Amino acid sequence: FKASLAVDGVVLASVLVALVFVGGALSFLYAFQIYQRVFLAPQPETGPEDGVREKSSPPAARVLVLTLAALVLAVGVWPEPLLALSDAAAAVLADGDAR
Image (cartoon, rainbow, N blue to C red; front, side, top):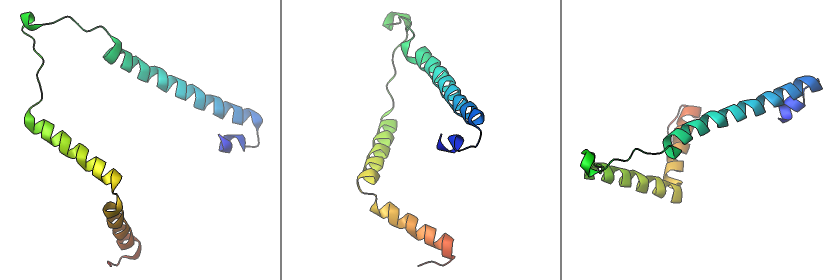
């Protein structure tokens, strides 16, 4: 917004700011329509008598998800090893020389 307002023409700056707001409003509208169809639409009534049962995920998938969640949590709580690795990689790329 500051860059568009720094433009010499007030009309051009106003048009740019208006386009950003219109684009944001349209993005919100489209995202809300998807959200509404997925989460707010009434679900069909099905039960065991219809032969439809909810399936639970296999144990291997549950273990995988829990392992990945624990890894993400661990990196968020203790990021130093990952930061050291990224610093070393950046140094190699910048200098062309490993430490």
